[in-house]
Amino acid sequence: MKLRSIVLITVLFSSQLGAQNWFDPKLIVKHISVLASDSLRGRGTGTEDERNAADYVIAQWKAAGIKPKGEKDSWFQEFDFNAGMHGKGGRSGKTNNIIGFLDNKAATTIIIGAHMDHLGDGSDGHSLDAHAKGQIHNGADDNASGTTGVIELARFYGMNKETEKFNFLFICFSGEELGLLGSEYYANHPTIDLAHVNCMINMDMIGRLKTDKPVLEVSGVGTAAEWMDMVKSFSSAAMEIKCDSAGVGPSDHTSFYNKQIPVLHFFTGTHSDYHKPSDDVEKINAQGEEAVLMVISGVIAKLPTDHKLAFLKTRNPSMGSASAFKVTLGIMPSYAEDAAGLKVEAVLDDKAAFKAGMKDGDIITQMGDIKVTGIQSYMEGLGKFSKGDKTKVTVLRGKETLVLDVEF
Image (tube, rainbow, N blue to C red; front, side, top):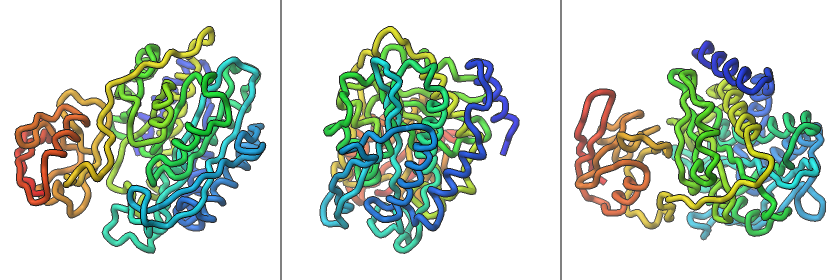
């Protein structure tokens, strides 16, 4: 990896924040190695393996001085789940969010969260691997990396509680892979008064920061007036921060935005290992995750302490269910704004885009008669096609403009 760029990022943030060595890449690797180990078999929702992952997180929280804030003074919040598509016809049972609290006797609380569950052995049908069933999906980036972020931020704030001006609620959600089940349940059954929550910070896939031209994607900057300037202050030549104003997206921050709580969602981008057995710890960029955690703690350090953030409603992309679309292009899109169109983070094997010759990094600017300017116009356009339809898709690939023939 290009270590020089990552070192530059951490030195830059250390000088901005007046501290060094807040987060340790060796600990990041240690946590992800445990959570994404074959012995935990992909942390499937409601499995004993997911519970064992929860026990590991809780042990780290206890060492950091975090106290339980689940149901009945426990670490756990139980809820029902069904692993079938759209919550029907699949494996069902009970699972748990795990919840910890750092009480600094402050007026407001910051929620720091990430989902802990992943796809298990691929049997529930959510894998993107053609031969998924029976293969362990370790989910090192998705989302052992985010869970590790919660562990490390809990450790950091636990060590510095005497100087902190906020309380912190740490949550590792279950059921995210099945449709944000755990975060939605918590938002509707909170264990603290949400009226005193200042904001919610969500981490989902923060372990694969690119080593050439590092880009951190941050969504939700439109949900509070202060967010944009605070977040952008950490953007530099060493690591660009791309912002999206929308408070709604395909991760757990959406559940809190829907309760009119300001949110930020941190994401280092998708990749060809997304929802496949190949998402393993060896591909994690631990120094990159260290840089992401420094940005998060830096943003929190800049928050005003004399008032609670005021929630702002944002214009959000459609988050309709998959059943609203008759076809799929077969790409993983970037959710960060791009003036040129919609960036393709990854092309999925044997899908329409793959067969048309689309490549990772292409930027879609036109789909048939539809001008694509971002995720919303892309999703609206996709809804106009049916299986068997053919169209032309215009993409930018570097400085070249290509027109590809796509059949859905």
